[in-house]
Length: 372
Image 1 (cartoon, one colour):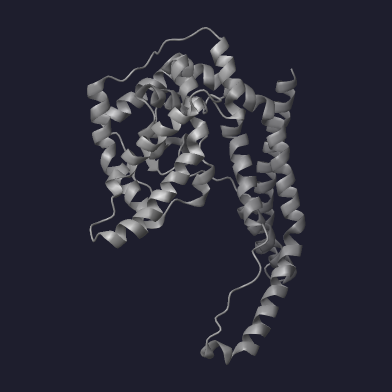
Image 2 (image 1 turned 135 degrees about the vertical axis):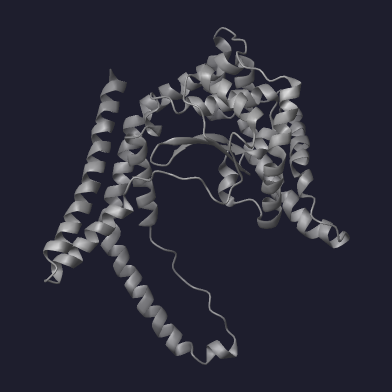
């Protein structure tokens, strides 16, 4: 009953957020149109429209910078994804995008709420075939209607509030100015301009303080109200993944979450080494194609070092124990060797593109905390 009451309250809060956003937009437009001959009303209306745009629902979209695969590009992969989706009981996926994260997530996008799998190549390269099925099943199960944080009402409201709060965060202060002679000649003008800029920045920060506090507090309230339902949905997704890929595979995948940060750190080390030591000793291209094989070997060594230690990170330990205490479940979806080889061939060009991007740009800092 407690979960139902909290979830109902979360729906009320999310509905109020959407209604308020629509009201801000409509009120702002009316103030601009009806008070066009005045000065105050259009300015106030413009402020309301901007506020509505800041907290508008984000429908999501395909990331244009990530390699994208559709059914025609990877038929064997999508055949596996369709089998997993059928076993999980969710709608089929529409696209797959590869990243350098140690994670796999299914994300709705667009007005029609299509679904894309954001698949981390390090995770795919280091997991066994059955662990991959477990991770994919777990990611698809997250879009079950019981997972209210990923739903169309609460999920979009929470995403809009989070994005709005981030947009309204105070910008970093201070600037690095050159000390060269050309700049030094205009130092007084630059100093005066910097003071005016800082004054305007402080004024805007004070003006946004109340909306920022309100948006942040509402987002935290939604997270608190949905915590019981999210925990229940998380456990249900574990059970669904166990029915699909086997209990053993899910436990192994949860245990490997502990390796996520170490794998990303090792990737960073490999990139730095390739840019410095390897480049200094050789004129050949950076060994991007070998990156994932080297990551897999490193991860295997980490697993050997972990043997005898904790089987999972603290956050996942209770989930592992719960699965281990339950009756063992066999796999409903498996991957034979020919299919696995075809999938690897289908993924290779996109995986190599991700590797080249990592070798060129490095590992994004946000990925260091990946491993959901």
